[in-house]
Image (cartoon, rainbow, N blue to C red; front, top):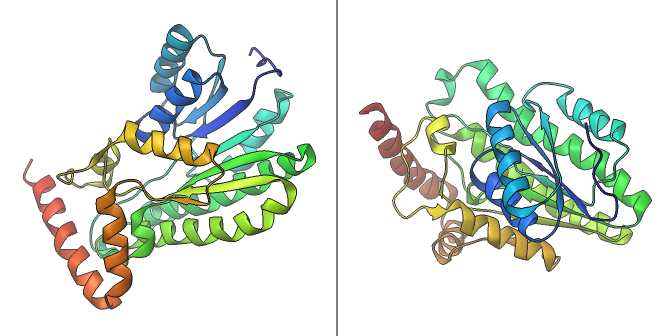
Length: 267
Protein backbone atom coordinates (compact mmCIF):
# COMPACT_ATOMS: atom_id res chain seq x y z
CA UNK A 1 0.00 0.00 0.00
CA UNK A 2 1.49 3.33 -1.09
CA UNK A 3 2.32 5.87 1.60
CA UNK A 4 0.88 9.36 1.22
CA UNK A 5 3.19 12.32 0.62
CA UNK A 6 3.88 13.78 4.07
CA UNK A 7 4.22 17.35 2.71
CA UNK A 8 0.46 17.54 2.18
CA UNK A 9 -2.13 17.45 4.93
CA UNK A 10 -3.98 14.18 5.35
CA UNK A 11 -7.65 13.81 6.18
CA UNK A 12 -9.22 10.61 7.51
CA UNK A 13 -12.93 10.37 6.72
CA UNK A 14 -15.19 7.59 8.01
CA UNK A 15 -18.37 6.70 6.17
CA UNK A 16 -16.75 8.07 3.03
CA UNK A 17 -18.43 5.95 0.37
CA UNK A 18 -21.83 7.71 0.24
CA UNK A 19 -23.75 10.81 1.29
CA UNK A 20 -22.09 13.54 3.34
CA UNK A 21 -18.86 11.56 3.72
CA UNK A 22 -18.53 11.09 -0.03
CA UNK A 23 -19.19 14.78 -0.69
CA UNK A 24 -16.65 15.76 1.97
CA UNK A 25 -14.10 13.49 0.32
CA UNK A 26 -14.57 15.34 -2.96
CA UNK A 27 -14.33 18.77 -1.32
CA UNK A 28 -11.12 17.91 0.53
CA UNK A 29 -9.63 16.43 -2.64
CA UNK A 30 -10.54 19.57 -4.61
CA UNK A 31 -8.75 21.64 -2.00
CA UNK A 32 -5.46 19.79 -2.16
CA UNK A 33 -5.70 17.34 0.72
CA UNK A 34 -4.67 13.70 0.64
CA UNK A 35 -7.17 11.25 2.01
CA UNK A 36 -7.67 8.07 3.93
CA UNK A 37 -11.25 7.06 3.27
CA UNK A 38 -12.97 4.46 5.40
CA UNK A 39 -16.21 2.54 4.87
CA UNK A 40 -17.60 -0.97 5.08
CA UNK A 41 -18.47 -1.22 1.37
CA UNK A 42 -15.21 -2.07 -0.41
CA UNK A 43 -16.66 -1.81 -3.92
CA UNK A 44 -17.94 1.73 -3.35
CA UNK A 45 -14.69 2.72 -1.64
CA UNK A 46 -12.73 1.61 -4.68
CA UNK A 47 -15.05 3.59 -6.95
CA UNK A 48 -14.59 6.72 -4.83
CA UNK A 49 -10.82 6.25 -4.76
CA UNK A 50 -10.70 5.99 -8.56
CA UNK A 51 -12.87 9.09 -8.98
CA UNK A 52 -10.80 11.20 -6.59
CA UNK A 53 -7.52 10.18 -8.17
CA UNK A 54 -8.68 10.78 -11.74
CA UNK A 55 -10.60 14.03 -11.18
CA UNK A 56 -8.44 15.76 -8.59
CA UNK A 57 -5.04 14.07 -8.72
CA UNK A 58 -5.10 13.50 -5.00
CA UNK A 59 -3.49 10.60 -3.20
CA UNK A 60 -6.02 8.26 -1.61
CA UNK A 61 -5.73 5.26 0.67
CA UNK A 62 -8.79 3.13 1.30
CA UNK A 63 -9.43 1.16 4.47
CA UNK A 64 -12.32 -1.27 4.40
CA UNK A 65 -13.65 -1.27 7.97
CA UNK A 66 -17.05 -1.71 9.61
CA UNK A 67 -16.93 0.53 12.67
CA UNK A 68 -20.08 -0.97 14.17
CA UNK A 69 -17.98 -3.80 15.63
CA UNK A 70 -16.10 -3.68 18.95
CA UNK A 71 -12.37 -2.96 18.61
CA UNK A 72 -12.82 -1.70 15.04
CA UNK A 73 -11.64 1.80 15.98
CA UNK A 74 -8.44 0.39 17.46
CA UNK A 75 -7.90 -1.75 14.36
CA UNK A 76 -8.31 1.30 12.14
CA UNK A 77 -5.87 3.29 14.25
CA UNK A 78 -3.30 0.49 14.06
CA UNK A 79 -3.64 0.37 10.27
CA UNK A 80 -2.93 4.09 10.10
CA UNK A 81 0.10 3.71 12.40
CA UNK A 82 1.40 0.89 10.22
CA UNK A 83 1.34 3.33 7.31
CA UNK A 84 3.65 5.60 9.36
CA UNK A 85 1.27 8.49 8.83
CA UNK A 86 -0.04 11.45 10.78
CA UNK A 87 -3.66 12.51 10.56
CA UNK A 88 -4.12 16.28 10.35
CA UNK A 89 -7.91 16.21 10.16
CA UNK A 90 -10.26 13.54 11.51
CA UNK A 91 -13.81 13.44 10.16
CA UNK A 92 -16.12 11.20 12.20
CA UNK A 93 -18.96 10.91 9.71
CA UNK A 94 -19.93 7.22 9.82
CA UNK A 95 -23.32 6.68 11.41
CA UNK A 96 -26.39 4.49 11.35
CA UNK A 97 -29.99 4.48 12.50
CA UNK A 98 -33.06 2.27 12.56
CA UNK A 99 -36.76 3.09 12.53
CA UNK A 100 -39.55 1.48 14.50
CA UNK A 101 -40.87 1.02 18.00
CA UNK A 102 -37.98 0.75 20.42
CA UNK A 103 -39.09 -2.53 22.00
CA UNK A 104 -39.51 -4.16 18.58
CA UNK A 105 -36.05 -3.36 17.21
CA UNK A 106 -33.53 -6.17 17.62
CA UNK A 107 -30.92 -5.82 20.39
CA UNK A 108 -28.08 -6.35 17.93
CA UNK A 109 -29.26 -3.50 15.71
CA UNK A 110 -29.41 -1.03 18.60
CA UNK A 111 -26.04 -2.17 19.92
CA UNK A 112 -24.41 -1.69 16.52
CA UNK A 113 -25.89 1.81 16.26
CA UNK A 114 -24.50 2.67 19.69
CA UNK A 115 -21.12 1.15 18.83
CA UNK A 116 -20.86 3.04 15.54
CA UNK A 117 -22.38 6.40 16.48
CA UNK A 118 -20.92 6.68 19.97
CA UNK A 119 -18.24 4.18 20.96
CA UNK A 120 -16.19 4.08 17.77
CA UNK A 121 -16.50 7.85 17.36
CA UNK A 122 -15.28 8.36 20.93
CA UNK A 123 -12.41 5.91 20.55
CA UNK A 124 -11.24 7.36 17.24
CA UNK A 125 -11.39 10.86 18.68
CA UNK A 126 -9.32 9.83 21.71
CA UNK A 127 -6.74 7.92 19.67
CA UNK A 128 -6.21 10.56 17.00
CA UNK A 129 -6.45 13.53 19.37
CA UNK A 130 -3.45 12.09 21.22
CA UNK A 131 -1.59 12.03 17.91
CA UNK A 132 -2.64 15.62 17.27
CA UNK A 133 -1.56 16.74 20.74
CA UNK A 134 1.93 15.38 20.02
CA UNK A 135 1.95 17.34 16.76
CA UNK A 136 0.53 20.43 18.52
CA UNK A 137 -2.14 20.89 15.87
CA UNK A 138 -5.13 19.22 14.27
CA UNK A 139 -8.80 19.46 13.47
CA UNK A 140 -11.72 17.16 14.26
CA UNK A 141 -15.13 17.24 12.59
CA UNK A 142 -17.91 15.26 14.26
CA UNK A 143 -21.21 14.76 12.47
CA UNK A 144 -24.17 14.93 14.84
CA UNK A 145 -27.75 15.81 13.83
CA UNK A 146 -30.60 18.20 14.55
CA UNK A 147 -31.96 15.12 16.32
CA UNK A 148 -29.40 15.86 19.03
CA UNK A 149 -31.74 18.59 20.27
CA UNK A 150 -34.94 16.53 20.26
CA UNK A 151 -36.42 13.28 21.57
CA UNK A 152 -37.00 10.93 18.65
CA UNK A 153 -39.87 8.46 18.92
CA UNK A 154 -39.47 5.63 16.36
CA UNK A 155 -35.76 6.51 16.13
CA UNK A 156 -35.09 6.70 19.86
CA UNK A 157 -31.60 5.23 19.94
CA UNK A 158 -30.36 7.18 16.91
CA UNK A 159 -31.50 10.53 18.30
CA UNK A 160 -30.00 9.69 21.69
CA UNK A 161 -26.63 8.82 20.15
CA UNK A 162 -26.55 12.13 18.33
CA UNK A 163 -27.31 13.99 21.56
CA UNK A 164 -24.24 12.24 22.96
CA UNK A 165 -22.11 13.27 19.97
CA UNK A 166 -23.09 16.92 20.40
CA UNK A 167 -22.50 17.00 24.16
CA UNK A 168 -19.23 15.08 23.89
CA UNK A 169 -17.94 17.27 21.06
CA UNK A 170 -18.74 20.53 22.82
CA UNK A 171 -16.93 19.30 25.93
CA UNK A 172 -13.75 18.28 24.15
CA UNK A 173 -13.85 21.47 22.07
CA UNK A 174 -13.23 23.24 25.36
CA UNK A 175 -10.47 20.83 26.41
CA UNK A 176 -8.54 20.41 23.18
CA UNK A 177 -8.34 24.09 22.26
CA UNK A 178 -5.61 24.33 24.91
CA UNK A 179 -3.47 22.10 22.67
CA UNK A 180 -4.11 23.89 19.38
CA UNK A 181 -6.76 21.42 18.25
CA UNK A 182 -10.21 22.48 17.09
CA UNK A 183 -13.39 20.42 17.28
CA UNK A 184 -16.25 21.31 14.96
CA UNK A 185 -19.68 19.72 15.21
CA UNK A 186 -22.19 19.81 12.37
CA UNK A 187 -25.86 19.11 13.06
CA UNK A 188 -27.55 18.48 9.71
CA UNK A 189 -31.26 17.89 9.42
CA UNK A 190 -32.82 15.62 6.83
CA UNK A 191 -30.29 15.08 4.04
CA UNK A 192 -30.69 13.49 0.63
CA UNK A 193 -28.63 10.32 0.91
CA UNK A 194 -28.90 6.56 1.32
CA UNK A 195 -29.13 6.97 5.09
CA UNK A 196 -32.94 7.22 5.24
CA UNK A 197 -33.34 4.14 3.06
CA UNK A 198 -31.00 2.12 5.27
CA UNK A 199 -32.84 3.34 8.36
CA UNK A 200 -36.19 2.22 6.91
CA UNK A 201 -37.64 5.67 6.26
CA UNK A 202 -38.85 7.64 3.25
CA UNK A 203 -37.00 10.81 2.29
CA UNK A 204 -38.33 13.98 3.91
CA UNK A 205 -39.58 16.60 1.47
CA UNK A 206 -37.24 19.58 1.43
CA UNK A 207 -34.20 17.57 2.52
CA UNK A 208 -30.86 19.29 1.91
CA UNK A 209 -28.45 18.05 -0.72
CA UNK A 210 -25.55 16.17 0.83
CA UNK A 211 -23.05 18.36 -1.03
CA UNK A 212 -24.49 21.51 0.59
CA UNK A 213 -24.22 19.95 4.03
CA UNK A 214 -20.65 18.86 3.29
CA UNK A 215 -19.66 22.33 2.10
CA UNK A 216 -21.11 23.93 5.24
CA UNK A 217 -19.11 21.46 7.34
CA UNK A 218 -15.88 22.09 5.42
CA UNK A 219 -16.16 25.88 5.68
CA UNK A 220 -16.97 25.70 9.40
CA UNK A 221 -14.00 23.41 9.99
CA UNK A 222 -11.65 25.75 8.13
CA UNK A 223 -12.91 28.69 10.20
CA UNK A 224 -12.44 26.72 13.45
CA UNK A 225 -16.11 27.05 14.31
CA UNK A 226 -17.43 25.10 17.27
CA UNK A 227 -20.87 24.34 15.81
CA UNK A 228 -22.69 24.62 12.50
CA UNK A 229 -26.36 23.97 11.74
CA UNK A 230 -26.83 24.11 7.96
CA UNK A 231 -30.08 25.47 6.54
CA UNK A 232 -32.43 28.09 7.92
CA UNK A 233 -35.24 25.55 8.40
CA UNK A 234 -33.01 23.42 10.60
CA UNK A 235 -31.99 26.43 12.68
CA UNK A 236 -35.63 27.40 13.18
CA UNK A 237 -36.60 23.82 14.07
CA UNK A 238 -33.96 23.71 16.80
CA UNK A 239 -35.02 27.06 18.24
CA UNK A 240 -38.65 25.93 18.33
CA UNK A 241 -37.78 22.59 19.93
CA UNK A 242 -35.86 24.40 22.68
CA UNK A 243 -38.89 26.56 23.45
CA UNK A 244 -41.42 23.73 23.56
CA UNK A 245 -41.81 21.16 26.36
CA UNK A 246 -40.12 17.86 25.56
CA UNK A 247 -43.38 15.91 25.42
CA UNK A 248 -44.81 18.30 22.80
CA UNK A 249 -41.67 18.02 20.67
CA UNK A 250 -41.72 14.22 21.01
CA UNK A 251 -45.35 14.12 19.88
CA UNK A 252 -44.57 16.21 16.79
CA UNK A 253 -41.51 14.13 15.90
CA UNK A 254 -43.52 10.93 16.30
CA UNK A 255 -46.11 12.12 13.77
CA UNK A 256 -43.42 12.95 11.25
CA UNK A 257 -41.56 9.67 11.73
CA UNK A 258 -44.77 7.66 11.56
CA UNK A 259 -45.58 9.11 8.13
CA UNK A 260 -42.08 8.43 6.84
CA UNK A 261 -42.08 4.83 8.04
CA UNK A 262 -45.54 4.20 6.58
CA UNK A 263 -44.46 5.63 3.22
CA UNK A 264 -41.54 3.24 3.20
CA UNK A 265 -43.79 0.28 3.99
CA UNK A 266 -45.96 1.10 0.96
CA UNK A 267 -43.11 0.64 -1.53
